[in-house]
Length: 325
Ligand SMILES: Nc1ncnc2c1ncn2[C@@H]1O[C@H](COP(=O)(O)OP(=O)(O)OP(=O)(O)O)[C@@H](O)[C@H]1O
Ligand SMILES: [Mg+2]
Image 1: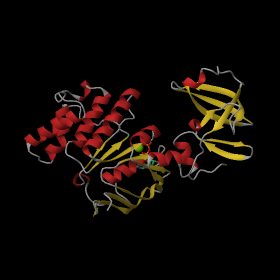
Image 2 (image 1 turned 135 degrees about the horizontal axis):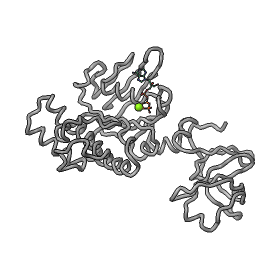
Image 3 (image 1 turned 30 degrees about the horizontal axis):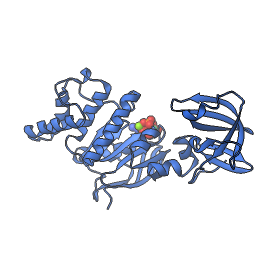
């Protein structure tokens, strides 16, 4: 039995098809990402699961119960948005308690849940602050505390990290993942950031153009993309020919070679980008431009010059459903 089952969901806005026969199942405790380009239907699907949007057809089952028509307040799910959506006139503690007060939960239990959830998100002692006294990252932690305070069956996160700067984002990404593991909350997070999806998910549901196009572990999605769109969306794939053989390979799967090794090929260096821990070389081989990631340590001995000869070797090619064309 799956925990959450999405069965043939279809959703239109007027004549526009926002979701086209969506099917998948999620197990209890999984961390799932909806990954896909802007406008593909991720938020709409999340809102449908939360009950904030009706479906045209299809059904949603939670623990085998058909909840398709159930009111959002009866679904025991909580949702965190990109914009923190805190009440500015309420303190942190009051923000977290708000939903529970509406559910008439006794005051001492609410206080306990507020304390526990603030502790979990690393904001103990901030209960009496107002949202505008907190940084963006801290406000998002409050939104998260509010979402987990009353132990939802499913935690829904709609791009919760995208408004934050890189360092805060990375820290909160790790903290959300740790928290999710610790509490075992079944979580669905929407993102269009492939790195976020790869690093956080147990499984990724890739969407494109109102459809689910692949479901798999981060490794499966990255290493065996089901089609060209997915392969390109989740990173760079080089397409080129060596001696008539058509090659699909990621930049990190091509390495610098020397002329003594088997199967090397030569190209000329067009340009390069310094990326910090590695260089991305753009190498021309008979009209194909091949991007190659080379660890910074390996570059020292070949000081880079435009048009210099570069010898390369393909370590690994792309598996899955990508086509060379
Ligand atoms: N209430 C609405 N009325 C009309 N069209 C809508 C409505 N909500 C969403 N859409 C359309 O449905 C499509 C999917 O929107 P959705 O917000 O689900 O995309 P998304 O994948 O979350 O994109 P993003 O990454 O930009 O947030 C878009 O083309 C959007 O314009
Ligand atoms: Mg969205």
